[in-house]
Length: 579
Image (cartoon, rainbow, N blue to C red; front, side):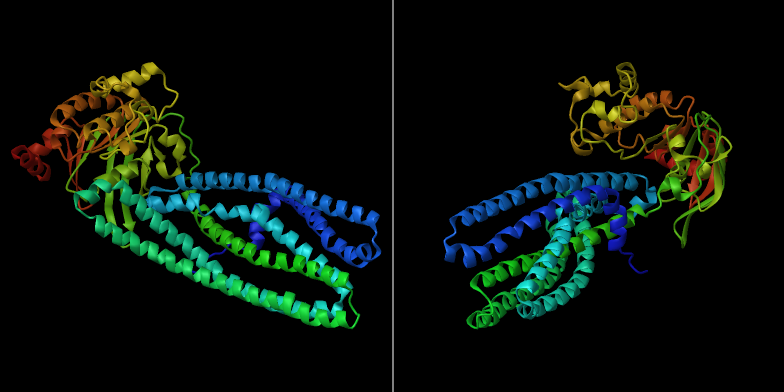
């Protein structure tokens, strides 16, 4: 599939046009600055041809004052440009980052399963950086430089048309080289953003998994992986530097040919023949410099704009991804729910060619606990993911209180949902902040009730800072059991109607598990609960037990019924009882 590129016209419509008043103000400021820059070269002609030969001191004072004032105007305009445009550009970058991050958070779980988090961080933080060259001084300087070049050309033609045309030939050649170079550079910049995201993504994973790396003595192995990534990045940078070097070297030669070779040769010839005065020659020289400088600057800004558009290409890819809310027409709003959930012939596949679940059907009444057991990879977590609306079925329907889940607004459903995972994620910060995560404005009384119910106080009471203890990245300063109890307290505080417990007690020691079983018994009262557990002793009191094998329901019933039937569940239970 061909890569979709952000055109300059589209960038103009979406980024520049909404801020046209600001850009026009920037253009006005730079036009004033550029107009003031013509004062010095024009004054030089009168200085050499009139003031010095005629010893005109009065005119000298006026000329000097005018030149000093012109530099003051340029300094003020430069300051205002930075204040008006550069700061606005940085604000625009902040806005775009927030929009992209919001879009990323709205994407379905499947997107994150296939994308590295570190790569997404790079795309959110780095790809929008180039916007500063579209809304900032870069674009305005490009337009201002064009205006300066055109005005300089008109003044040069007034002094000497023939010399102007001769010096213009190398500039045209340089412009052609620059345009061709930009066409080469843009895909290189686009590829660089992709490589940079991949390298940062791997580095993020490496730092997050440092204990695994050191535990398996894999530092050298990870070093090689990272070295390969940065080598790819280096080769990409080398390509862009080669194209930039071609522009730089060609500009050095061609602009040198125009400003020195032609100016000195042909200009000297015209001065010797009396066709050009000394003042006109120096005025021509300064005006030519004013025309050439923006052309050189335009090549640099053009490179920056090319990089900016390449970054916007990748940003637009993210913004065009279909969010969860837009995957289907989710118009049903749930103010409250009872919690009756029904799976009717539900099938699901992560990949088109391999179905994970096959025609799953069952009903869970409000307040019931349904346990999902079976071997690893049988489809238990997939069923829980479907119930939590993290995934959408390929066929069949899931209903909540008789309403098709695929038609229900996700926010209205998930505000009644709570999740406790096997490796539940804790944020860097304090224990208090992590428990309050689903309900930041909860009262201290409700917080302490959740803390007590999950037996978090059993270990926080031993900490000097109690609930305000910092836990480090992903809760690294706590034990597995302590982290899990905080996750359960978080779910208790959320007070959900539908609860998913995915191996919620797997990280606990025997003593902690006994405490948590009591809190879970309280937590699940009156809530529709999906429990995934390898420890079958933890689900004996479940209202229903589904034995999942190879994506199908192999057995279904209560603990007593399944034991009596002496089938797959009986074999699993008696095997665990022996070990």
